[in-house]
Length: 471
Image 1 (cartoon, one colour):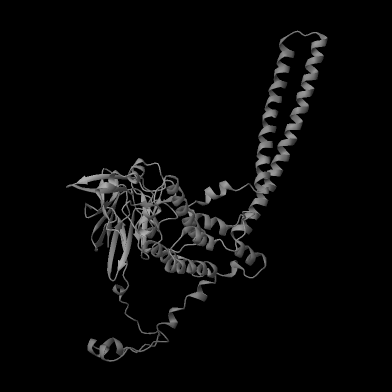
Image 2 (image 1 turned 180 degrees about the vertical axis):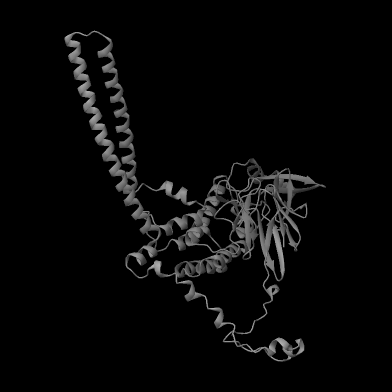
């Protein structure tokens, strides 16, 4: 583990590591690191404080791998993507003759860049992982966060953990283990489950995924009908204008017999074109309606397969699920007896408490419900323009504006993609700033990057310019 400190300066978040050897700050490795040529690693600069040198790594708008998947599971595609990108970082370091031992593999120091949607590494020139602690920590992280229901993936990741324990962790060998027995994918099938995987694995929205897919037959048919309709309409208008112009010339000017024959021929040709265009408009309308009907059927079968099967096979009739009101609500005569003994009204309060209440016509005694036993964790919006409260349904719970990567989306420009995270430690609720650009505030005090504080009911929490009250 590295003893890192965090600092915010002029809208940038920095992770600070001390330079152990003064000569390291003037070495070739640092010059390459500070030049920014390797975009796959965190940009770095050296600052001198009280005679000591410190590395300042810019982590603005970047979330660590540990925070990205805290409380989440990783699919096989996500594990391969992470390993492939880390392997790409090693290859880039080799191009610049940088020692591979300087790349830190601890999950809390592997970052995800929100802008480029790529993983970037931390290169620390003074780092020496001689015992392989970083590789073991990374392998254990994968084993802890994979989907346990995927038996094949679990077995392969377990082998990677054994490799890290015995002979060290090597990314190329880990990739080779994951890709064993796989065949190249020949075709991408358009089904809802693949759309969900695209959104979960890489943060791609459904609209972006659909834009990458070739149009279906019904879509091509619908587009062709629309183009044919506008083409026919354009020529119909031109034909009408041409006929009107020919009639105007015939009535205004004195024409010879040959010119009159030319006018008659032009009107006949344009009339024929007008007839053809009208016929095309009618045909395009029928074609468009049939394409729309076919597309609607496809959508119903694609996105609602269970509902379509149930309705078409007659397994249930949703029209008969609503029963008459008198069949659902019991009558008052069944609850309150008309022959109730009037002596109950004359009993004193002491007698009523001493003697258990009678069960009237099958009505059970009222049970007291202690609402304080079930705690609620909510953030109530304080801004007039914001009426959306935040309910912390589980822990950890992340907040930001990047759909698919956070648990609650705040669509505001001042909020970072992954802004903050809530955790629970015993009975305490903790708030952590996730390297946000505009900061996270507790009771008006701005938190440092990666700082964790305890919040209590009544605290005012601010994400960028969005104000909330925790109750």
